[in-house]
Image 1 (cartoon, one colour):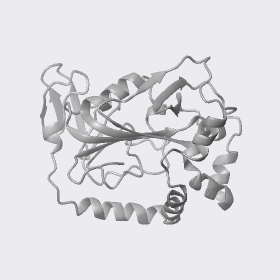
Image 2 (tube, one colour; image 1 turned 60 degrees about the horizontal axis):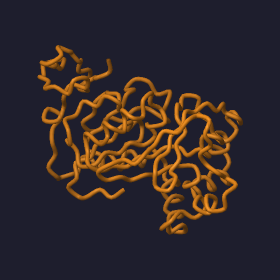
Image 3 (spheres, rainbow, N blue to C red; image 1 turned 90 degrees about the vertical axis):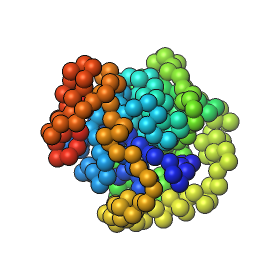
Image 4 (cartoon, helix red, strand yellow; image 1 turned 180 degrees about the vertical axis):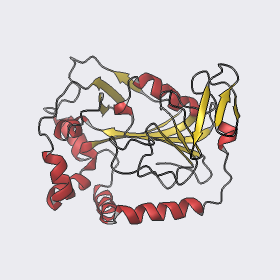
Length: 272
């Protein structure tokens, strides 16, 4: 991710493993861990909100990270529009079509591919074909885990954008990824501009470190940041009408549409 030293960074769907570089965290499910791999982390300014209705002012951030969220949402057009509204640059990551076919997550609404530099989305009507087989292999079989890590480009869509997100939503009946095409296969095996060997070893090293240690280091890095930050009071708006909000002791109040949003354990809750 091309994040500059002084960029103010938002992370959508930060969950249990937020990026060390993120300044503000936003997650739709503070209490519910079903759709993530562990307990929520709230070690920096955090809000509970739906990515389709972000409670942040226009261009409040320099960069927005949206990893493993797009495939979940009801309306991807709305989420994408919100990402471009709150920041001028960003990064999107999702499972690829191959990842969905092999692993299968019943709560994913969309299949996503990156085709000729464009995000392509299609309603996910596939039923998991292999149950929990590959999830179990990823957790218990070192050979499969190593293959997954070193060939992550097969299982993931990784898309960085500036100014505008290039995407399309295709009909459910239209095939997307042509796995009979030699050019498509070559692009999956050796992505353009990648240093495959270097990326493989970096990925292996990253995954060799226990998650608890990684989380601890990230928290230390977050606390040691010295760059100038905006406060939540400066950037929060009503998620529905984008109007000004006032802070009260235990809640937030929108003057325009008269909505109230609670503050629970110091976290503004914008789910409605």
